[in-house]
Image 1 (cartoon, rainbow, N blue to C red):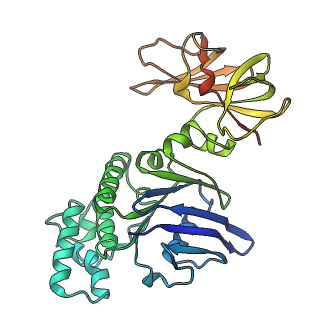
Image 2 (cartoon, helix red, strand yellow; image 1 turned 135 degrees about the vertical axis):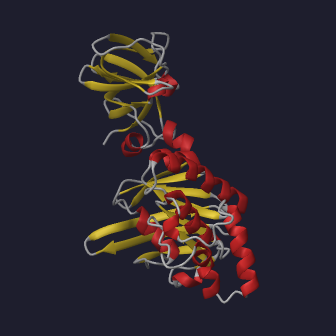
Image 3 (cartoon, one colour; image 1 turned 30 degrees about the horizontal axis):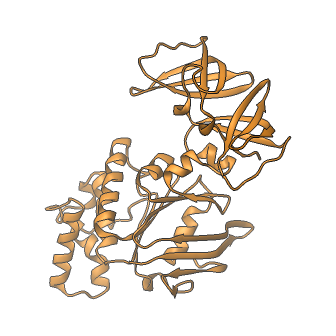
Amino acid sequence: MVKIEARSVSKRYGNVRALDGVSLQIEDGELFTVLGPSGCGKTTFLRTIAGFELVDSGKIFFDKTDVTMMPANKRNAGMVFQNYALWPHMTVFQNVAYGLKARKVPKNDVKSRVERMLALVKLEGMGDRSPHQLSGGQQQRVALARALVINPQVLLLDEPLSNLDAKLRLEMRTEIKRIQREMGITTVYVTHDQEEAMSISDRIAVMHQGKVVQVDSPRDLYFKPQTQFVSEFIGQGTFLRGTVDSKEETYYLVKVGELTFRAMPADPDLQYSKGETVLLTIRPESFRLDASAENVMLCLITQVSFLGKSQRVLAELGEEHVVIEADPATQLVAGQRLKVSVEPAKTLMIKAT
């Protein structure tokens, strides 16, 4: 397998800059996800890796080989498309075997490799079926088997689960991660679904307006977002705009209205000055439903949603909105005053935009 490196990759479509100096390094055997909203450039980036789009500037390397201008069919990359792109007039076996026959693999090898791949994706005995006889999840498995049967250096997946229902999406997430681990193949996975990205990825690159704004592990993206966009895009949370009042040894004191919060910079390398406007970000599960932590707030509950394993509580703190995750057994109702608190270490500061 290979390491993928993009160096200052840019791509324009007319006046639209789809990719704006994207630089990324994807490690050998890593399941790397490119995450972002529609139109951020993530699919364009995937297609430049595949060779379906040529970059305007920059370089793409597979290990030390410059593949920037190499045709798609020479890059040895397997692609799984959003709409599966299965041939409707071919059987499952013929769909999976298509890439092998195009490469003139001997007939006996084709049969053994296709059968081995159908077993890997748990479709044994279904080779004679037509795609229309399969469920959406099974069709996605066929598309995955077709991409993998050619023994690619790289596996590329473009929003592969977006056409599946919620239950199948959960099932296929697990399957994709299992197959990727078994094969040890370098994988680039594109999605706009934050939960999907968080659940399967080794690392995630968050894209916005053609740029990569943060690359990190799922845990660090969630708990240590470095920009307002990442903080708001990755999961729900409370976002309080305040002003730096002073700095202690570890924490900053930040004024939000009449309240003062002790907060920690999400990026420890950044320094903040007195009077600077910042955004405090607090994840829903970080709240305590008492005053036992230092940052104490008295909120007014506006809505309570029962989610089974928890309750999602929406509340107001003056003109600010607060999102709290609470134990489902706790009795909470709209209109109730609720005192909550948060540890300073879980009250993160980021640059306000």
